[in-house]
Length: 125
Image 1: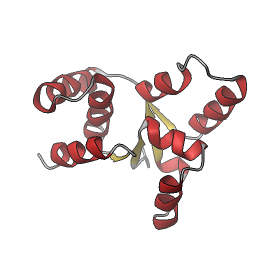
Image 2: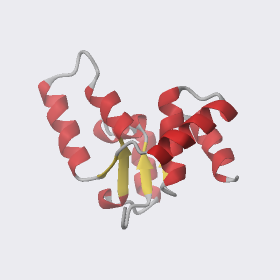
Image 3: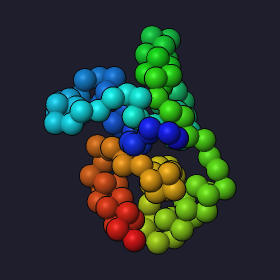
Image 4: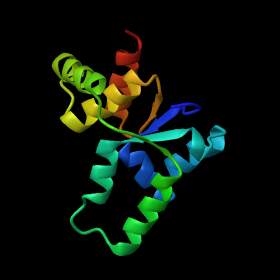
């Protein structure tokens, strides 16, 4: 994952696509290059698995994701997910995201404040 520094959560990616004000503020405050960003397999599933997704949305999501680094599931992420679920009681998708960031030493960008708070606890250990 050479050069990758950030893991974008599903809600952050949606915020990018919809020009969410909070995401726009993050982008104004920090110099973030899309090449510095990664996304988890679970984010891809959540984004593209939405039942009412349109062809235009699929195209937009695919274009954005193609510019980022894809992080597949691995045994290390599985093990970390199990530990995080046990210790912090996060929902499975959030635990996968937290584990992915932790295993790959990536900063997590999320609009979910509860997950951000948990990630701060997880990262401090």
